[in-house]
Structures are given as structure tokens and as C-alpha cells.
Amino acid sequence: MIDKFVRSMAEAMNGIKDGSTVLMAGFGEVGAPHALLDGLIEQGAGNLTIVVNSVGRVHKPGQPVQGVPRLIELGRVRKVITTFIRAGSIAGDAVRDGRMEAEAVPQGTLAERLRAAGAGVPAFFTPTGAGTLVAEGKEVRDYDGRACILERALHGDVALVEAWMADRWGNLTFRDSSRNFNPIMAMAGRLTIVQTHHVCDLGQLPANEIVTPGIFVDRVLHVAAGDPKLPA
Amino acid sequence: MSDTVTPLGRNGMAARAAQDIPEGWYVNLGIGIPTLIADHVPPDREVVFHSENGILGVGPAPEPHKQNPWLVNASTQRISIRPGGSFVHHADSFAMVRGGHLDLCVLGGFQVAENGDLANWAQSATEVGKQIGGAMDLAVGARQVWVTMEHTTKQGQPRLLRRCSYPLTAPGCVTRVYTNLAVLEVTPRGFGVLDIIPGLAFDELQSRTEATLHRA
Image 1: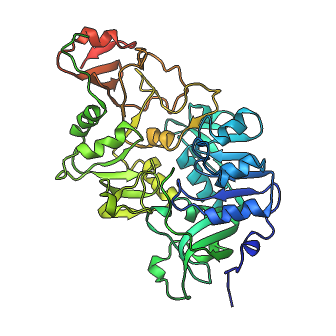
Image 2: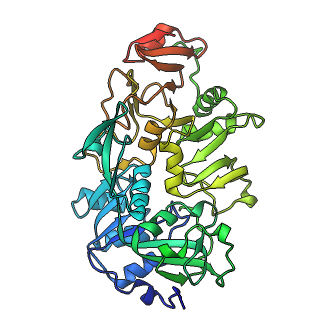
Image 3: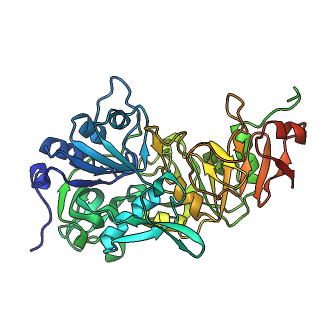
């Protein structure tokens, strides 16, 4: 019997190695697998490359440091691949001080690199970023009179995903705008770990409504995380 | 500028741009002034708003008691979804952008050049902050790219230039600019002035602009 449910966070995080590339889904607080990230912080892997849409707001004194900024603060992140990094944030300071590398990527290119990884496309040409700093070091070709740059697929050794509902095959649904990066990171991860708000029996999710089929999923942990919070 | 001239405020610029968006267009609105545009499109004019984080058919901001924490826009503000709206994942959302399916995106800007170059994500190549988001994809992918911004910086420096000095978002992408003083289109011979706020003369507008202006 296929059963992708794991019973503990330790089981969910088992085997994540130093030097891994970790895909972290979510857009702001919505669709972000915060419990799994806490689990990764606890698990201890370091020298990580973190792929995430945004690496956090400027930290306000007195507020707890959580999530990716916490992992950076602990010195566990070698590099971030992201669309949004702010000067004066914990991530920005780490880059400024040479403690961490950052690769800034257009958001659509990030999404397409993940999709390409999941679909077995090793690289693709796109006009996004041509003629800008993003094009530095990349092959340029003209297609239909337009300059395009070569972008590589982006695999994760690990993908951390948040779902709304899941069954034991790892079939997933998502709630409202929490879908965002979750389905494509699930596809691009060699080890895809899911935290799900709700659990249901096999067959309960209508085939027409499953967004991510279980073939893209390795482990599922039930975490009743509650509603996403507004950014502080 | 004479005392009788009142530059448009943020909502004034948004309202002016909203006037020019026809029914039936699919439109992405960037962070800042562009986000305000949705509030100025008359409710009986069907315009479908896209948000990069996977929403087509963004509706107005909900009443406080009707807020849905699972539904945010690209500025991570809580929003609503219209009847007919849909959710997609990020790659499909950017397929709408990059595949040329959007009629229009409206972006904020630091600088626009007379050849349509846009700079809106960083002020130098070496600064730590890199706030690209979806701007490069939108600037390249949408059929029309409009920019809303103040005509000059807070220090009075022009933002409409012969060439951008900040790092580019995309070369040659901007089709129109809505500032607090004027509406301009990017043409093969540079900026053409489509509209000036009441009481401001063409020469006064030119004096606040580095690029040479043309009467459209």
C-alpha cells in the first residue's frame, strides 16, 4: 500500500544533507510551509542554497526572527536564489557583509526554471532579462528579431510545499492564492516534502480537483497550521 | 510652475491612467500607484486584473470583516476575487505575462528614456537591494507597458531622460508614461505629449524633462 504520510517532523526531515538546494514555496505568508522550515532549522543541515520568492522584510527590533531570515542568521545558508532582496534586511546584511551569496532572478524566469526542471527541459531561451544585468554571463541569441538569454532549469534536492488537502498517495489541493509556487516546486524537487492543513481518504479528492498529483510528492506531514498571518 | 497649477496626486495619476483602459482588457497592475488604478475603473467597465501570484480576476479590497487571509495580491495586500476569476500556479501565471496574453501592464518607475527603456528595480548595479519581482517579465511580455511616476524626483531631478542611468528593467519596452504633470507616449522620435495638466505650458513641462518633448 502506498502511504506517503509521515508521523513526525523528524521523519519528514530525515536525510536532508549539508549543501542541499532547498526550494521554499509561498508568496509572502500565503502558501509558505513555515512548519517544515522550522523543522529544517531544527534538523541542522547547513551550507544550503535556498530558492524562495522573497527573502524577507526589514527586521523590526523586538520581533522574533523566523523562517528563511532565521536560517540565514544561523549561518546555514550559502546562497539564496530569489526575486526580491531588500537592503537592510537580515538577508541583505548577510550579502553586504559577504556571508552569503545572492542570485537575483526575474519572477517569471524563476517560475519557468522550476517548471522546466520538473518537466525535464534542461534550459530555455527567454527575452526576459535580455539587455539587463540579469543577462551577464549568459548566452544570447536572437529569435524573431528579439534578443533572448539562455536560462537553466532549477532543480531542488528538497522542495518544501504547503497544501490545503492531501491523501496518502500525496495528491494535493491548494486554497485560493496559496497555490503560487507550490505545484511547480513540488515538480522540481527530487525529495518533495509537504505540510498539509487537512488529510483525507484516498478517493475523497475528486480527480477533477487535484492540482498536484502524488507522483510529484514524496512525504506528507499533517500540520494544522491555521490561517496565514498578515505581514507584521 | 505658477501657483495656480496643481500637480496630480497619487490617486489623480491612477485615475488619469484608468480613463484610458478600455473594456475587455486583461491588465496587470504593479506595486504602488498602479495598484490604485483598479479603484478608478468604473464598475460597469469589465476589465480583468491579473496578479503575478496566480490570480486572474482580482476584485476590490474586501470589507474588514470579509477579509480572506488566503487571498492576497502581489503586494501581499488582502483582496477579493470577482465572479469569473480563477487561480493558477506561478508558471501559468507568468505564461499569461510572458506569452503575450496581457493587453497591458502598468508599472512604477524610477526613470524612463525616450527610447522606451525602463529602470524601476535598482538605483545602481552594486547595491545590495535587488527588487526585481515580476517587473522584467511584465515589461517584456505585456503588449502595452505604461508607467506611472512623478515627473521629477523629490529633489527635482528629471526622470524622463535621454538614456536611463539606473540599471534597466527592460530595453525599449515603455509605450506610455502617466506623470503628475502630463501623459506622454513613446514614439520613434522620442516622447510625444498627449496631455498636460491644466495651467501648465508645454515649455514649463519641457523645463522639467531632460529628454526633448514633441507635441503629439
